[in-house]
Length: 400
Ligand code: ADP
Image (cartoon, rainbow, N blue to C red):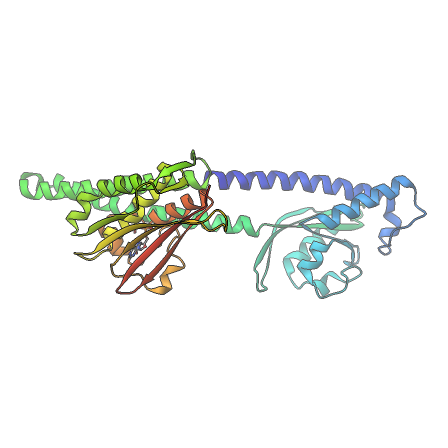
């Protein structure tokens, strides 16, 4: 999350610097060509001086390559200059924007009043503009007056439409994440406070009840601990702040180790763990990160298996010659996952059955962590599932 906000700050700083540079370029351009440009936009005048030619070439190149929409209107609110990005924003089907009235381009009152204010000499910034086409876009509009000193209004106004769609989306993701985290933390915290209060108000005398309440407190505290660990881990992976050392990994040994670590849990759930990887099979990966992925997937396999179920870990070799990736499969014969959930399964905090996941001490972040670790390897993780038959998670790893 930190890196997202740093990116946003950087974007704002770059945008402001860029706008300042742009305004300087435009003002210098207008100083040189004021008379021509306020009558009608002209094509390149070959008789102009080399210096003027250079400035106007720079101006046109800048306008053409900008991602920001740029629109200049004269006193009559007619467009006298625009760039391709503005054209795309307002009306891609119109042959040209120049000489159109602003009201013919948009009925958005916020845009109109921002340009009107600028013509009166008042600079406007932070005007939020949204498009409602098939692809929703959000812009931050800044309009500055051009020319017109001595208090008699401006000769024109320059508007820059900064595309902040991505920043808005990131902000939404951030807010959703924060609200999910708060919600997830609040539930165990509420239970802890409630049981501590019960102990304080007399239950402490009853040894049996006290033991039970303390175990509930411990379980909820562990859940908070697990959640914080997972959040920190995911944030570090997403922010690229984890060490990643890929090399040749003995998959047979790694799978055996992870299965051994889960032996007690599997036995408690009456689930058989089968490591079906031949000796001497190796993959190209960061061993610790691969172990983390297998741990999360096997843990889920055990949790979501029925009593007497089996979780199998197997390997399908890829081929460096054809570009096929190695595959590590974690397969269970549990209840399976309804098809409509599969697409969103790797999203943070997404669960098929929220209450069941919580009861089993889940954080809802395990699969998101697996997804990001697989991406870190240049690979991916996929899932296929059949209701009543079971689920297969596959880690795809590129060959060395
Ligand atoms: P959780 O902490 O809830 O296990 P995960 O991100 O690991 O969080 O998994 C998200 C959800 O995906 C789980 O809550 C569960 O609904 C579903 N899920 C994951 N693995 C399996 C599986 N092997 N079988 C059935 N459902 C699964």
